[in-house]
Image (tube, rainbow, N blue to C red; front, top):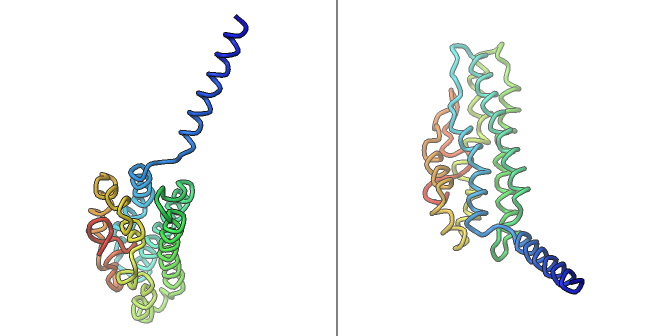
Amino acid sequence: MRSGRITGAVTAAVAAALLAGCGASGPTPQVWTDEMCTAVLPFVRTAVGTPEAGSGTDERLRAISDYLGRTTTALDRTLGDLDRLGPAPVDDGEALTARLAGGLGEVRSAFSGARGRVDALDPADPAAAERDLPAALDPVARLGSATDPLNQVTGDPELAAAFRTSATCGELTRLAGTTPTDPPNGPGVASPNGVDGEGGGR
């Protein structure tokens, strides 16, 4: 009986070790891609929200500043979620994920920088504020021609296939196509995070 109990305990320990090993293997490319899109989606949803245009310069500046602040905060959450998700489970996954995060970090810097410029405009001088607003928004406007951070993902065959079959990634692509093109009195913003077309590619 004692031998049987020992054998049972050893078997249970081995099974537990095997199960633990399976859990440590990390997500599949499909699961990782879906969770990556889940992390990025709140930012895109925030970015496609058009700033409310007020009747006066002061109201417009506040609305645009609030919009830029919301997108920056959403990107902070996205970057935190991606960091917790960890590297993509593909060859060169760590470098790929680092490039993705770096690209999104550049997008965040553009929104944050634009907000700082907008906040520096003087609503007490409406003519000057209206004149200088396009230049203040230029960091965001230039994102339309920037490299799409998601190209880092869709450039990998395994992740690209997972992207195409993910409902969340499909929603991400759909929303990116509805991004507002003209913030109030500002230059066009074709795609706040550079996402455009199938799988975020161009």
